[in-house]
Amino acid sequence: EPEVTQTPSHQVTQMGQEVILRCVPISNHLYFYWYRQILGQKVEFLVSFYNNEISEKSEIFDDQFSVERPDGSNFTLKIRSTKLEDSAMYFCASSGGGHYTDTQYFGPGTRLTVL
Amino acid sequence: GESVGLHLPTLSVQEGDNSIINCAYSNSASDYFIWYKQESGKGPQFIIDIRSNMDKRQGQRVTVLLNKTVKHLSLQIAATQPGDSAVYFCAEKSGTGRRALTFGSGTRLQVQP
Image (cartoon, rainbow over all chains, first blue to last red):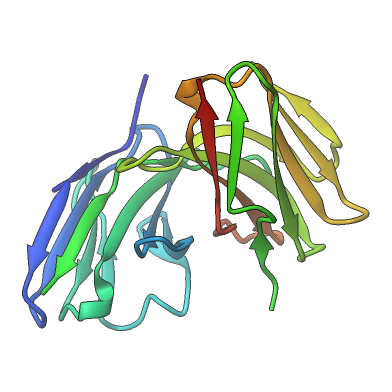
């Protein structure tokens, strides 16, 4: 069964450093997403990406964040200058693009720890 | 503001019993709802979904009920098993053109053997 994969599973970084989180969405999907989950809290939407551009983003997704699809299979989230409060699980998701019932399938997540 | 929330943070049931997990939502424009299961250290796993033009949808051992009048969503799990122990989230997609999911705060289901 196709699944979303993410690397690394755990990333530790120093405050102020740049990190890139990587995802391989399900191969025939058209929409890609990043969500985050701070420990013990809700899953929060960050950004969606379609046709090589951002289609939607939340207030969390400020100028420190960027997304890219550098090739036909990878989808990345970059945080330019990490802050302590960026520590969270980051989930990538993808969906096929149906109008109403567009199920989003999630990857296993990357745990980002900012020291 | 608009939100999706859960009534009970923890639900403990006996193995073999039926479980009911509830969710309230406040956005009347929401047109699609999904239940996800999240096991420790893993990503949300799709369980079942329902469109706003439906009241009920059944899957394998799971049923989702939607009551739009009171903006309430429930997930029923039949014959709960130890493997069902996890945190369950409801999520909604609101408005035409928006694909962002708004997640509830989650209910932890504990299945006692």
